[in-house]
Amino acid sequence: MKYLLPFAAAALLAACNTAGRPENTDNQAASLPETSSLAPHDWRVVTSWIHRSHGTMSILYGNPAAVARARNGAPYSEGARLSLVTWKRVPDDRWFGAYIPGDVVSVEEVAVAADAPAYTKYEGQSLKKAAAAPEEATKRAAYILAQHASIVP
Image (tube, rainbow, N blue to C red; front, side, top):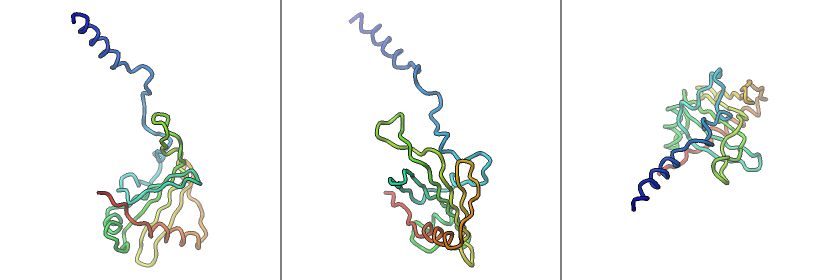
């Protein structure tokens, strides 16, 4: 019994050892560049999905007007903005079998206007504006606008 207290104290101190733990566990590769004027992370998540064959994962973010419409199934109204962020999937070093976002592949934005939605695409980690053919832009905007909100209990 008299040896139990020193043993417990040693075990407690050993458990508090931080040697070998990474100092920064933030996923910097998945972050959008500081210089980016895009701010989808300030919005709310509408839905997300994984595309295994492409090795990517995506999150669709929306401003408050878009989220309200997406959640009740109503058509998007003027002023709604959606942003689809796609990352490469990479294995998580800290959780066996899990995947986390890696480098940013693209950010696609759709702004709903009175006449037609405006589509803009940015590619790569530096998020350079990418040119899209009009028919591709129309098709991608329609695809993004057709996504339903995830149902969360």
